[in-house]
Amino acid sequence: MASTSDPPSNSPKRASERVPIRGTVHGDIMVFEPLLVREVSTKGASIETSFPMHIDSLHDVRLTLGDISVVLKGRVAHSHVSDINNDVVTYRTGIEFVEPSGPVLGVITTFLEELKASRATASKPAEAIKMRVGRLSGSETV
Image 1: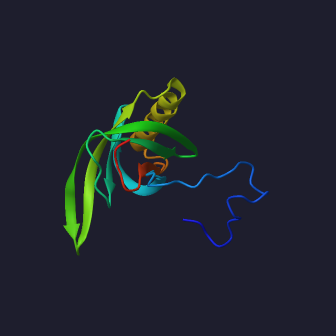
Image 2 (image 1 turned 120 degrees about the vertical axis):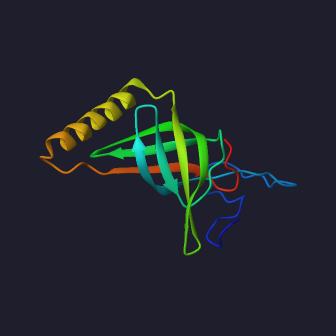
């Protein structure tokens, strides 16, 4: 959808010519949605979302582990309604990490070891895990 500020498709300001499409071309856009991480390991995570996720769909997952963020692929292993409260539906989903790189595994492993150690000594509060999942609006399957 063109906005009123878009130059015409034949404008000399464009780096390349835009060609009008006859018929329909469909696409998807990835957006990052916040979610709650319930459990995490080097193999995957259990998450809660306000939206359903399709089994076997692939998503880009961003984990913020303390001060470090990592991005990896995740496959939806299972998903179900976990709670309905005041007409708000919460979904519990299992995400399996797909071929995480060595450096990403190292960051996750270090974070988990530090988390376990902090709980054992109770000397400092555990760092929060923040996670966002990239999902395609409209179509969930990648």
